[in-house]
Amino acid sequence: MLPKRIFRSSFGRRRRAAALFHSAVLGVLLLFFLPTASRAQPALLTVNQVVVRALEKYPAIGVSQAQVTSAAAGIRFARTSYLPRIDALAQVNRATRNNVAGLLFPQGLPTISGPASDQYSAAQIWGSAVGLMVGWEPFDFGLRSANIAVAEAARTRADAAVARTRLEVATLAADSFLTLLAAEQTVKAAEAGVERSDVFLRVVESLVQAEIRPGVELSRARAENSAAKTLLIQSRQAVAVARALLARLLGLEPSDVRIAAGRLLELPPAAETAPNLVTENPAVLEQDTAIQEAKARLKSLERGYYPRFSLLGSMYARGTGAHTTGTASEGPDGLKPDIANWAVGFSASFPLMDFASLRARQASEAARVEGETSRYQQIVEDLKGRLNASLAAADAAQEVAANTPVQLEAAQATHRQSVARYGAGLSTVVEVSDAQRLLIQTEIDDALAKLGVWRALLSMASAQGDLQPFLQRASR
Image (cartoon, rainbow, N blue to C red; front, top):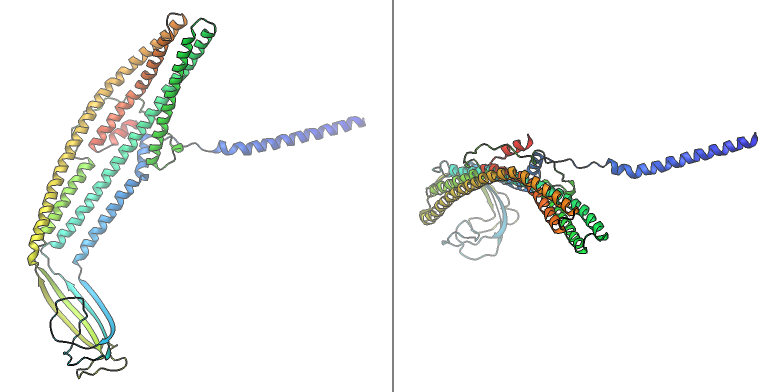
């Protein structure tokens, strides 16, 4: 009985040791694999989400909004011209007091007040001054209000520029989405082509090894297989490039960009006839604000050749160490401004010789108004052309998308028949290769035909200045 107990005890210890070993191994495996398993895959992005994120993240939007902020500050600055101008002055100096009679034109030399000195002296005195100068224009013949109108027109133009930039970014994001989706569909067709080519290559290899087919057919099959793989490589490269471009708009890494096709791989219902109106496009509205801004500047210049009237007031005090007897005080006399004065007045000024420069500036601004008006007409005509071209492209894409299924079915039947004929010894590898290439191209054409319709609809919506109809149809 004792040996049996010893055996059972040692067997139990081995079982417990094995269990502990398995638990440790399982724990290590879990620690190794859990981070990978718990790593969340990037969420699939729809075209609507791509557009919204691009509008939030793309730096061009921030640049336009900063211009709006700057223009708003310009309005506040223009309105400060209604406030009076108040200048404060404080000064302490030590200098000689020699003074001469005579005239000097306004210049930057220091001036000395008091009677002329009969003789030169190197004696120095202290001088001090404090004062306050107030100036205000009670009326200006509409000049300040015209300048404020210029600033407000600039703010309106900046707002319109934001709307135009948002449309351009949204259009670019949606177009990049369609480009990436088209590239992914091309990859799928190329992968299917490589799969069929691999299967056919194995068939040819077996027939050549059995000496049923000549060796030249194996070389041709391998060449076609390599060509199919090259097409797949190029298609994957196109996907990588398209994903990188879309990631740039979204502020993401390319590896984090994964898209969901939604209804974009389906043929959309026939679009209603869109009115040939592009006047609500943000680009048109922005150009209209450019015309209004130029007109506001012209009006401001027209208010420039008027008199300028100002109410003036001043309070000041001075201190000096000089005496009317010609002697100079010693010590700190003059550091204290103890002689005060005040004054009020009214001034008028008129720029007599500014008419030539103002007329030249008015002519320049008038030419700018004409130029902005011509550019407005050009933008409208260009957008009309884009809209008409998009309508024609949409009609043609609809017809192509309706025809490609028939073409695809015929290509598939041709491929099946050519492979069957080759297996029966009724055709060569060239016929099968031609059928394979035709099928790959037809699959790509069929996948891209529906996306061509959506791209035309996007172009129409962009020309009209509103992507919401396109986005709503894509998300239904």
